[in-house]
Length: 269
Image (cartoon, rainbow, N blue to C red; front, top):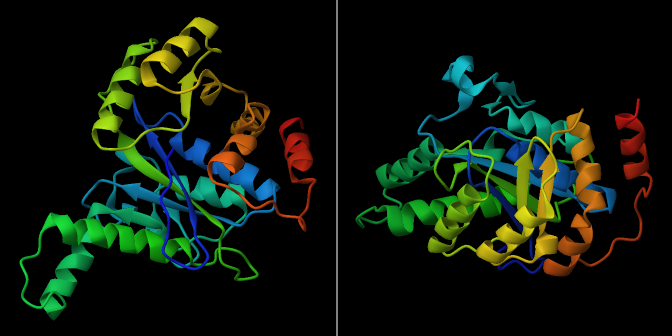
């Protein structure tokens, strides 16, 4: 996970979640679970899903390739992960909370046709990259709660993976993906490892050493009976304390402190 600052007088906090080995094994649930923990501490959270495909939205996808389409209240046909965000965070998202390569290119081409670039040559850098950043900063500040208050934190899930597609139960794929991530100028703060069973201490130490991340910041997410157990698992691993220190949270005082108790009761029914 990484962060970057907003020039606004009230800086938005950003958390980026991306995959390193294979797709479809839990980035969306991890993102939703992080949001659940943050909300349990009184923070307002919104989520953005960035998908690399050129399709404008998920409406024309084959369900055999991408699963079911999730339809938002505003009619947006989006990735199913946004359904998880809404269920876990109790928010109402909008179609712009799902960014695709197609949407970004369409917005840039529309600006070019209107003459917004004043005759300049339109290129990936800076025009496409600027469009992505502007889209994220704009959508991150749109309220997703009933009281219309602006979010404090935006969780961004980056679709796809950094590394090669491998299905080994080893630490090598994770090491390679982190190395490639660093090549893009991003350094992970946390590494969350999916596995069928709990990791051994030796595996955790190996990932810590070769990925240059503290051992305490390598978290194992083994298979659980219900997805709703994941926020509790992350909370038990001290996730909030880490995020609070890393992102310099100002503690909230007026909020429902029983949310995680209710959440635990839900998972034990």
